[in-house]
Image (cartoon, helix red, strand yellow):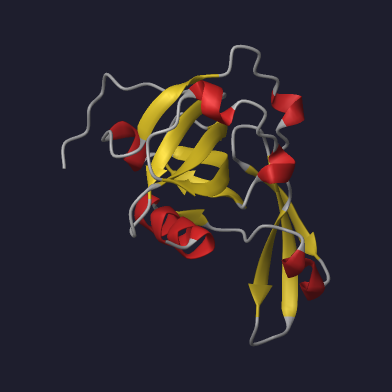
Length: 155
């Protein structure tokens, strides 16, 4: 696997994620730390063909099937195909939510808040029941993202 340094992305870059069972999901970079840590929104339905920007026009955070922090290797090595950029990207419309970290053995949870540069700002105890509404506080590798989206979108 060779990393292609010529591929670039930034906030507002849309990309296609290959699913393990065939087809594609769609993602958008909502935050990028510049060191490989990235945050994005991911969308279905599973698409048989690579979508165009026109095909995904109108997608919004409320349509996401998964949101999370992830490593950018799939973008850098070209396995996640860049589709293009939003011409009118407004980061305030694509918020970076708080995340939740659960300790199931103790029955406790922490709410983690990150800056727009994906640096941890704060963490505070919270209700473990928030796991239903807050994304998990984890940095997923690109393969883990592909597997998760494959499970969520089926074949």
